[in-house]
Amino acid sequence: MISRIFSACVLAALLSVGSASWAETFSGQVAGVGEVDVELVVRGTPKFPRRAKSYGVSGAVVVRFSVDAEGNAISPVIVESKPRRMFDRSAMRYMETLKFKPVEVDGKATEVKDVLMTVAYVLEG
Image (cartoon, rainbow, N blue to C red):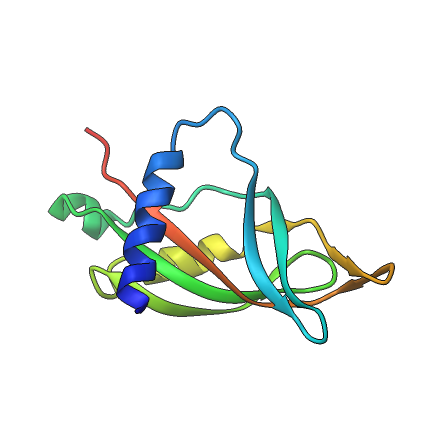
């Protein structure tokens, strides 16, 4: 099942590249509420590892994480990566650059868990 999610997420990520509007939302879970969407408002750029570049390899990493009440990505865990471990360190560093719009429940900012994101690495040219 993860492989199907991985493939669909990579395809979606690749198709969205070059889009004029990059506003993205991701689904997660809030205790007592259920599924909610979190909106990504700030992101850095994932660094393409030198080793992958020298081998001419593209790939992607699926990361599961939570979004705290301030909108930070916390507790990231790699769910799947292809090729295995080639982009993991870069993806984990990239997670530190993300900022989400805090989710409010009953007027109070709350943590969102089980958010999945695919970080795609596409070798240009």
